[in-house]
Figure 1 (tube, rainbow, N blue to C red):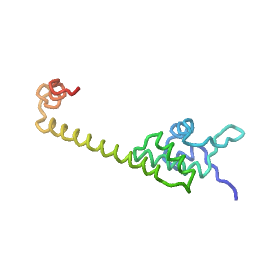
Figure 2 (cartoon, rainbow, N blue to C red):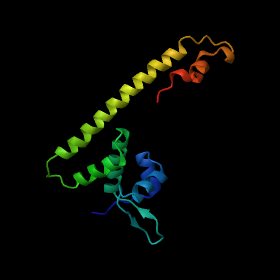
Figure 3 (tube, helix red, strand yellow):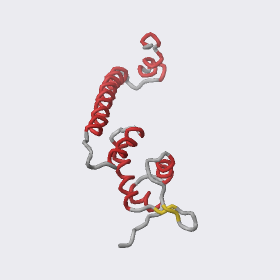
Figure 4 (cartoon, one colour):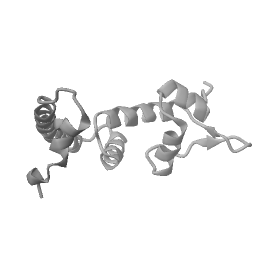
Length: 139
């Protein structure tokens, strides 16, 4: 069976990931070094495409580069227990919940400062006034 090869441009087009990001993932070791043509062009195979999709899904879920690196390493041992992968995912879930809680606080503050805004002149703007108010700064 003949391998199907992708140029970096084709890989970018099929995955929706820009070329520089693909190169970056290769540089930091998330993607394996692809085969090269005699003209030194990268030639990716289906496994590279699948790995890139894995990385992109993980990034979309907020996983850090290091967590993705760990998950990739774990995926290379399909018969091992999945406890470590579960731990990584639970940690990401906890971090996401913390971010959501912080975003809810931000939402309430933005609601508070935009509520009195009546759209007059800037010197009367409650948004600008609230942002300039240093009495409520947190350390």
